[in-house]
Image (cartoon, rainbow, N blue to C red; front, side, top):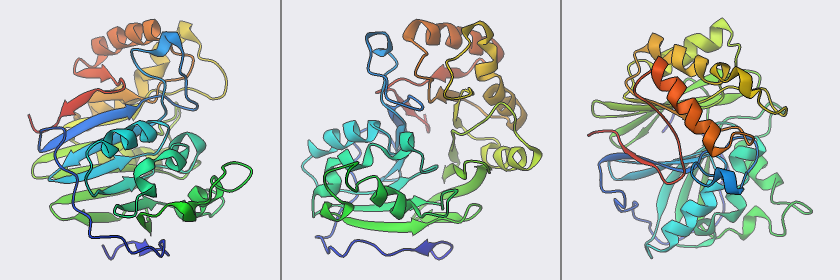
Length: 300
């Protein structure tokens, strides 16, 4: 992994960790632990799709890859603790905004000395590294315990967008897909299968960003993308088609095989998302809206 910089890690030296067991039962599977954008929305009318912020787990070729650490990461961590195994996983952040990192202080396996986590992210718009961003949110008065309380082996890597990461038989491609937010998109390749995680699409995409997006999603088996909206204002439900037209257009152009729309707006209740799913299927048939707990097999 010489194409990105290894930053200072925690000083703890845990026992040798073993890869996550295949708890999902497939060679390449994707599971959604958090599908909400901006802020957690635990209300009675978001039960079916879920109210936790972004966290997606991919189990591929015997390795666990996690994308984003929103509040869904806490639920994932509780699930992993029940395995009573030494854990090793790779955690990739798309950016350092609160809805992508706010679950990390509550990620219970990171407090266990026998575990090992490789953490990847690029510099934020203010120049802070992913390690610095995670440290800052765990300082008083925001959180009672600093990052150093986590006893697991935390290895931090400073990504340079455009570089590739080799994890045994798995290749992770990176691209800067939103210059304004310094957001990274990822493409995970294994054997002949591929998944792209591109979740910072805006309604207006400039030519450079679009070129990088199309390159990273071209011909993928599965694209995980966001519907577009303009935070922090509420959605205009009378213009629902504007929420999904960008990921659909990109999917058609890039010959994407299957599209999953995630990062739902906090104001989008279950019934409205049902309506969106019906609409988007008419424009791109092989589409589904992400819901918490949903598991998809990529190589089946």
